[in-house]
Image 1: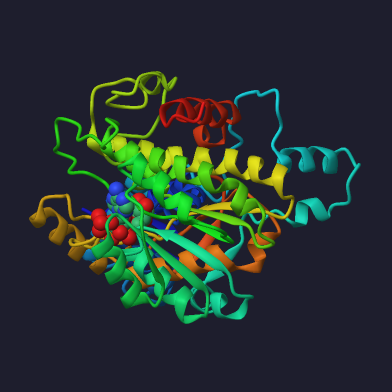
Image 2: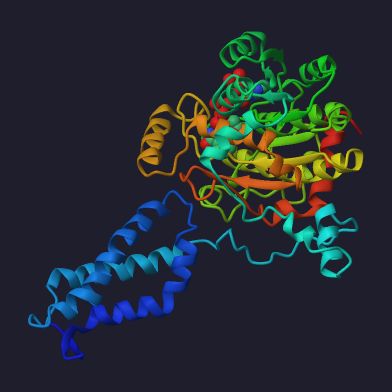
Length: 458
Ligand SMILES: NC(=O)c1ccc[n+]([C@@H]2O[C@H](COP(=O)([O-])OP(=O)(O)OC[C@H]3O[C@@H](n4cnc5c(N)ncnc54)[C@H](OP(=O)(O)O)[C@@H]3O)[C@@H](O)[C@H]2O)c1
């Protein structure tokens, strides 16, 4: 027996109607706000299901019912569809994390020193500065794909160093930049890879093995001038690894390469970079630094804790915990963002026009590139599913993002931006806030202090 209710003389089935009302009243606002921002891989099927079922259900309730007065009742299969739609909505709502485009105000650790932007905002709010200070904030800025590919060719030519330029995002970025007429230095781990990168991209070859601090020092000595320093190289080890692999200097390989090698390189080139009229630091990071992001909440989550691991050279993890390859990668990307923030302040002190920005090239699940250390079957299956689901980007797109963040005049107007490919698979860059931990000024400074000691700068 089907329970029904009379509405405008039309007899409607009661239980899906109640489910629909419940969904509209309780879930709708959260659903629309959250599900559209839900970047988790698991969320894709849920979100697609909702997108497919919602119109079908609305049609069923809103139009078909009134049009089908004579039938008085909806077909039974519509009842199942309706119930399923409400269920999917509820599941998505329960699973979805807080949105990132409208982040809730997060408490940032109190610090004795305010960042330049914080200071501007405070002075602006107090009426001591014109509101232009606010207009310069890039948060919410969306850059479409065409602009990402075209901008590098429209600006004055620069000398740009790209680490990890022999593969993936670095190689594609070097190609776009060199084709646009920039003087690109392909800094790669050995001569053969650097030569191959230079001949494929049109740049020049240089050796810089980030897992060997003596190689980083040798490379830095060869650099006479630089306008843009792109710290792009990075690796994610097999998440099944139980023991850490070590760099030449004894650091855990992921943090040693993705953070400490780049940290030393930046410090050695900081003065040369600050002398340029177009000085810019670019860091290839990832949304997985943020435990609230779709990728960041799958598996282990990033946090540096009190950084006690970094107090000794033979650390397994930054937070002093046992080795976890998945977390080590996410932590390294958190280090990248914390590092960018502190570097942006240091650079600004030396050159008020200099800027520093972090960006993500998006999910590029290349089994022979970034996923090369993962089991082949997993890498290939994941790549196929992510591509089919429409959440993947290509290395060419990632390279275009790199070339844009390295050269776009828009990024001269602010510093310490976090430019993410958001929503996933939509081929655009969006500037928004990084995670709450990434915004802790105390942590940015403490990471800098401990890293300086580890690489022998302190
Ligand atoms: N792919 C993604 O889904 C994704 C998403 C977000 C962020 N990212 C970030 O994007 C950046 C580029 O990744 P990708 O996708 O282009 O991956 P990729 O194709 O594997 O490229 C990584 C590059 O880093 C280089 N590299 C690794 N260890 C090095 C070392 N010790 N010294 C010098 N170079 C070293 C690699 O050189 P070798 O070939 O010699 O190893 C390679 O050129 C990374 O920082 C990554 O964290 C990637």
